[in-house]
Length: 326
Image 1: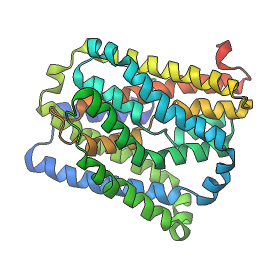
Image 2 (image 1 turned 60 degrees about the vertical axis):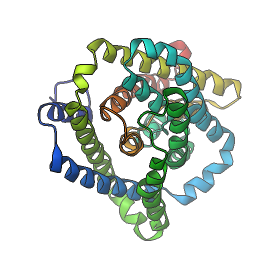
Image 3 (image 1 turned 45 degrees about the vertical axis):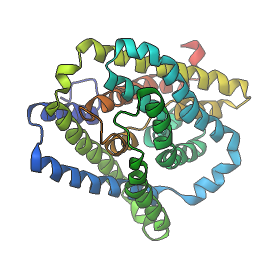
């Protein structure tokens, strides 16, 4: 496995998919995994709240034009592009994969990778910290509303429950707020044990992926998802990522941002969070016929795609290049 040209976490995701395909959890075991997963999700968002520095947020608010532009890419441009591409997706994707791509468009930005790529490329790291962290916080409220608009309006509401918004507040936003309020007492410990947060992120994602794909496999996911539809999902994800990256780079230039700020907008505005998206999908699409597998697949593909593309572009930026010269 170490010789494969993909990161260890992606390898773990592939192993989890294989395990859910061969040995899906059923009956009482599925109920038990659901309860464990809910507890892990609550812990995950509690730790994310404790990690968010209030001082960094207050300091970053002074650069409001940059943050507003990043949020516009994340929560306005992405959903609009998803809706514009929906007729194409309806032809080349299955209904579940189409909803999955629309769901990707509503998610907040990543935190760790946005900051890491911004730093690697020589961008404005403090601004990236604020934009990515605030995007994650806003997403716990805004993503369910955007999902409601896109899914209910354009898909007849299948699989989406407005009651799930209340569950989001209870399972995600409440632990996040509690963790942030307790940061003066536990923030130091969390900062010293950041690998713990990374492993909590990854462990929670693997748990949700296993339970989601187990249910989907039992419902016949692989029988209703042709291989060509998976390839088409990769193509649609790539098109979305390319369009947003181009708008973020050239739009930030038109707004007169300095190069470091343009890099921050480029990386923070084009990312979508797997760590937030997978747990949230478990709550938002609890009533989806056929399970969550088709919803989560486009997000997993987009996650790997954005990491590979951004790694190449960040190295290019670090050598004083830009997206126009690639």
